[in-house]
Image (cartoon, rainbow over all chains, first blue to last red):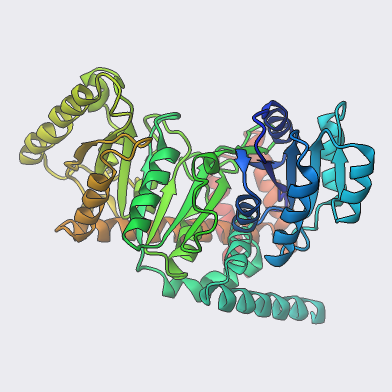
Length: 134
Length: 351
């Protein structure tokens, strides 16, 4: 009863079809003891926000390889805030150029994980930064 | 004591706030109540005390079957069918938790993506968290919350099941068991267990070879055999589906005679017929059967809460040490488990 797993949404917004990374991360976080809601490919920002709200997740993890992150991520952030999910942290994985990373952090993204990040690092970051469970 | 009172007041007001918002249609509040229910917090208990009396109107439909049979895809197709008729629907989709790490991969939403902007569809994934019956221990309570919030149907999708996970039958008014074409020979259809608790059997992937033949075999073995069996069998103690040894089984000695349908969830073929069968089952003369299911559901919930409370009382600071000594004595084979329970129950009585 005291052990409340952190719940993470792993979503792949946008149109690229490369979901291997998202699946590996979803599986890896499962092994780290997280409850992972995996929603699959080609999510619209609205789908991501709805899933985050209905599932009451603590973390939204976005995997983007298409280069559309500067469009998609701020839009998802805005929808989450509009839905009252200010306490949900957003993290992004994929190929994010350094300049964009700065802008995304300013837009409220808590963590950005590029190639070479280990799953243990992601797990540690989420445990340290996800909202406390009530 | 002052601290305890403050916590209790906070809990009550938080629960009141969430239930008021959820009942008014706030989906975020509903989602947060479901989290509290899953985590079995004091807020959940306070919220359920308010919500439970408002539940009981929704049609609770259990969807179960082996992994990969198409449960999530069928649920998605059912949502489309229901929404086409203007009915609201909530889904509780359960996937297994890892027995090793406690983590879980909840993947049922992958097949249910089309309803993001539809406020009358609410989908919630749940990890089974070590519960073995095909659902999570809190799934029935979650369904009651969704029921109270006014959804016309609540679909309970189990983890992929084998032959024995029949718990969903107690949690639902109507139980649909999914099978794949070529599920096995006729002997599979007459084994005890999952198929026995089906009100409706759907042979999914109806576009595959063998679907119609599988459906015919199931009809032959389930429906015809059930008729013969009904004529010959007396009451069978413990034959109930819900709670062996509970008060329910003696009421339901007879095997069910499920409708057997063929569906193709990916195309929607057979789904209108499935919905019609669900409605028929709800409206039919099987009300007494449903009353039995409801009693089984009530029983399961009350026993579970009783067990939780008893355990909490036995592990409260005043009794913890004595309880642990008793448990250790059983572990050491110095005391048998029955004598241990005698001792623990006696310690509860002298408060």
